[in-house]
Length: 158
Image (tube, helix red, strand yellow):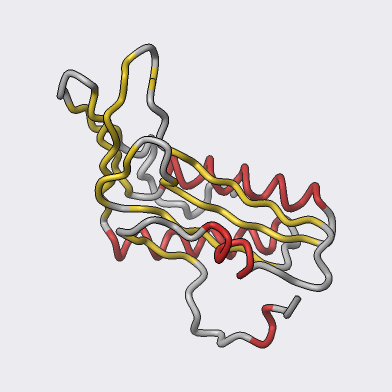
């Protein structure tokens, strides 16, 4: 598999998309001959949450801010977990039950780093990135959820 080193430095490793996410392409983007661990996390829309049937989700974002924060978090993960590669793709707009809402792919020389980075990224994204999720219940009621912490990431010791 080809190393990421040959890719353009201007290529974005984080994207917000309004179409289904190609999980195989996201995983392939982190392929590296020196990686012994490749992790693909696919967060999907579940059909029942806390006993309530879900018709689907809808995501909105402050897109420019969200992309900037995703890239920052990705850069932090690359360094913190000694990753070979890392890609993050988050879906916007309506997402049907069973479809991917977020995909995180990581690769590292050892599996522990790849697993730890994927989990760390997901938790940070859910906390600080301005992406809002609306659950639509089977009865038509809608409930918006917002990131838990919109404080500046500076000085948090991430």
